[in-house]
Length: 416
Image 1 (cartoon, rainbow, N blue to C red):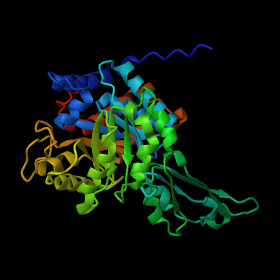
Image 2: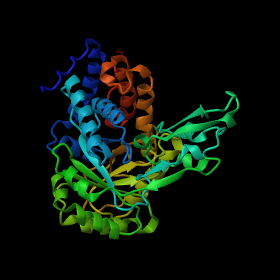
Image 3: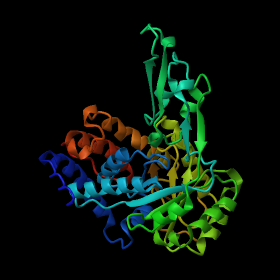
Image 4: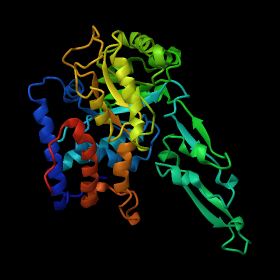
């Protein structure tokens, strides 16, 4: 059977095209004279932007729409769960963005894995709603940033009162594909009924994903509690690691031992490192949507590493608590797109023309500002394709540009 014919783009996409072309033109201007791949050139300048869909976020419909919007906004990379259907959703979103604005640069697609089940990014909340008191105020549902908990009170057959909560029960629970493991529900449950179920991504399945021509990068999350599990995962991935353009390692600040830990991992990677490598400085994981102060930890992490001369080679990128205040915090620290700054130690393996902080990865905050637009699409459309709703697509793009633009240095968007 022949594949269905793609729907024609709507004339009302003109405002979307205008906004996206504005961003794409500014980006091309910054690439003039740089022979590196566009994504690498961005890392060297310090204006790389990565969208984090979530290492455990597997709602393909949302991932697709997020990828579409942020591709139009000009991100350099989209990081997603190491799951074939999620990778497919990312690439579909990118393809739709390119069909609307052919001038957009295709971002690299990155898959995230872990070497340790203790990593907070790789867990799901779980509980049985039948264990919940029927009169529970459902704080877990209210606090969840991903709308991953849905509870409905239903009447028990044979009970007579429609107004007495004790005559009913709760049904529903965690929407597993939407839960990305932030853990906020764990502490607010008044009855301690919610538990976190941790897991490790299957390296064999990951190795197969890395053989695809639409996967460009891998990110390995590690807890900083030793290199044995990192080495085991690295060995398990085998030759598949040679298929990617970029290998990222995401790690927390573990104090004085951080740089030694990083150097040990770099030694493991070095013999099979054919592309570029990146260190993701994970300040305060999955907290960027909470408030301004959440970004301080990742900036402090960068300041600390910038003062150490024997840090390993590679690009450095912020994550964990990043939000609309991160750029200002970097500027105050003297680290925004800077190659030389007070208190910095020179590394013998670092290009003096390369910004120390190569860029910023946005996760929870990026999903929040676009997600509130996605939630405006009328419920009758179900899993809506945002491009079928040009007014919402434009609004979502403007939100994305408000986050990406300050890093990329886009000029002010003209009135549309």
